[in-house]
Structure formats: C-alpha cells, structure tokens
Image (cartoon, rainbow, N blue to C red; front, side, top):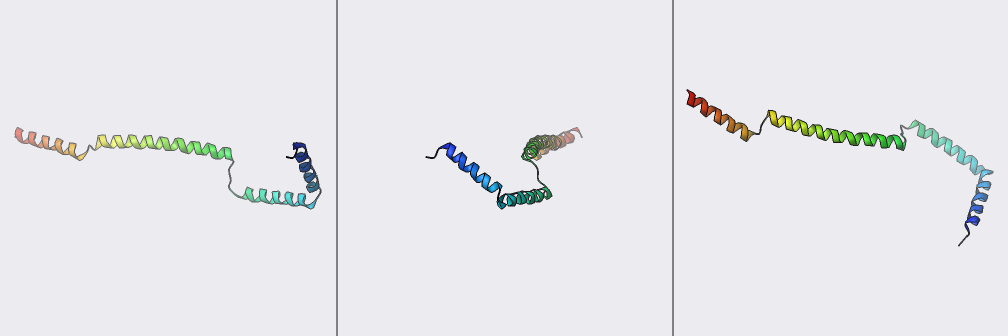
Length: 99
C-alpha cells in the first residue's frame, strides 16, 4: 500500500498544478456563481433549521395538550347523550310526581 507521505505529496503537487492553471479560475468563477445563486434563494443555515424544528416539535406537543383540554371541557359542558337522556328522564318523572 502507498505510504501516507506519498499520498500527501501527490495531493500537494496536484493542488500546485491546479492553483496555477485555468482550472483554478474556473473553480473561483463557479464558486462566485453558486454563491450568487444561493444568496437569491431563501435558504437558512442548518442551525436555524434545527432551532425551528425544535420549536415546531414543542408547538405540536402544546397543541396536543390544548386539544385534550378542549375535549375534556366540551365533555363537561355537553355530557354524552346516554347520561343526558337518563338525567332528563329522571327530571321529567320527578316533575310529574310533584304535580
């Protein structure tokens, strides 16, 4: 297998050759063009994305908690039909006995 020093030396020689060739100018131009294109796009950094992802996660949890609270409050205000029907039946029978 090739020695690490040999590979490093080959890499540095290739970089020297490319640094003094028109290929380096092409790379610079491509970088500038890509940087310009990316700046026109509405992109965010990975860090910003991760922060927003965490905010959305907490928001979903809070939404689920609030939905559960609303469901419980609705049940308290509007008891199920079976309980309401039995309660009404008891009231009507007691009102008939009082008359």
